Image 1 (cartoon, rainbow, N blue to C red):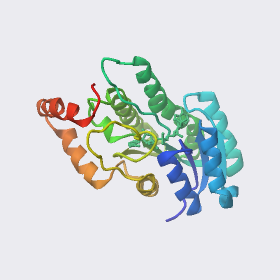
Image 2: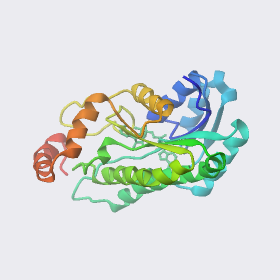
Image 3: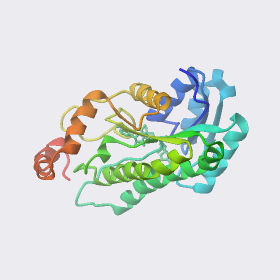
Image 4: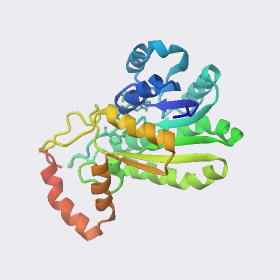
Length: 260
Ligand SMILES: NC(=O)c1ccc[n+]([C@@H]2O[C@H](COP(=O)([O-])OP(=O)(O)OC[C@H]3O[C@@H](n4cnc5c(N)ncnc54)[C@H](OP(=O)(O)O)[C@@H]3O)[C@@H](O)[C@H]2O)c1
């Protein structure tokens, strides 16, 4: 597959972002790597030491616009113009009543929505000037509908999906494509320790990375994976509201070992 040029990847220190960074570097892509977790970022760089010349790591918090602009411009000075942004940094968490925890909702909206907007803002002037680029936003199937034990996370990913959809036509007119990615469950720190009542089938981060890289290469409008999740969640997404509510009334409490 032809190299897409310089790829800027947020959330590159852990989980899906880390696995994607490693796979992209090994196939010869040039990468700007951003994460707020400096130690995790350093360990990715150490793992990729034989690709050192093709990598520019920067520690930054995606919720800090000026830090993101600074990091993106430093990366471009080292590697050249960013042609693909993969906005993967995200935070999750459960919404377990009676503790509604609006602060957690705010944090998820800040990272999962505003953080993606900041990352786009940081690379957008260059992409517009060149009339080319590709923005890959990592949303989630949890944003297809309101998940009863993930109300805040679902809302943040639904907002991200809608935000990217809304931006798509204006970006397209400027030569910039938008791909929204919807992973199912992936075994990472984000899902670790979720008190599921029954074992839940999860992809490994390396499998998720392969799907993400296919989306980078093929530039579809949307990419949901794995296939089983795409089919199951696709049905749930189109289910009439009354039926969905009835199903969640039952399935919700059966999903977790804790009250919500
Ligand atoms: N795991 C799943 O089942 C799943 C399913 C669907 C979608 N997703 C999405 O996939 C993406 C990656 O998730 P993951 O499971 O790989 O999570 P992860 O293992 O927790 O990795 C996320 C990385 O992003 C970093 N990050 C978080 N907030 C940041 C910020 N404000 N600025 C910069 N970096 C930040 C994290 O740093 P810290 O460690 O310091 O937080 C971490 O290194 C997320 O957008 C997530 O919502 C995950």
